[in-house]
Length: 361
Image (cartoon, rainbow, N blue to C red; front, top):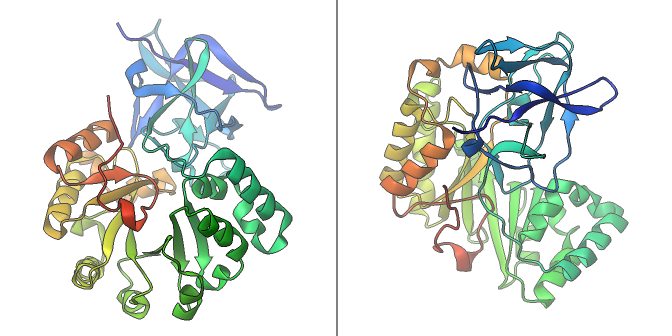
């Protein structure tokens, strides 16, 4: 008999309590479910507990049914880069949090005298040793021009050897960080969300630098504009690879984008934005496998889709198909597609074809 994590709630002052007999209820798609211990891992050390205004659902074992519990507020956490949540918060929204993209919030339970979360550790990569990382962190925090890198998630990416910036114009600003990485012969990835000028890239590129560009595959004009020898890899931000998900000619543009990327010899990967109950539905999974086989994509990075789940599932009726569960979905990918690697961070050129470190129990 597997254990079920206890319900965790908080009062309005932020004090957190575990309920003496009510159990946790989480969500996948539009369904409230009772999670078991095999779906849980200890809450990562870097996480903090947060609360949201609402009425949590709970499982009453005495009545053998799911009930709403008005005695406390829902508690959640936000997982650090490298982790993927597999289930969502289950609660009744209150009117003062409309359109909150809470789908990436991870619910928290209490079991074996510790906080637990429904999640998978995808990748725990740390390329930069602690002393050097603390030096880089100090430079970032004391330089107003690059303080945008001081966010917790940005620092987590940096420690994994990846610097994520919004614009190629910011490349000159991060030169102090790049100088240290290059002088210590540390291979690193610079991930650009927007590219204005390829000359900015030329100025900072060394043998240790990999330039990765993130783009939306539906914007063909952007893709054609950024094609350059200075860019090493392309990452496509994807919510779905199911033609039924898109309108007009959007999916045709996705096909053309991948064709252009592969034809031009870029290492092509996918940022797959996941949503429990949608991404792991059989319809979505089958189309994902078909697409990966067609274009021979070898690397998938997993992300959290940030949407209002109620509005999302009203629009996308995936609940009519079987839900595999995100953990099972990843097992099936590893089984069906032997050449596909699953990770979280972008890879440097020397790592493009290394095996995946992800192990799923």
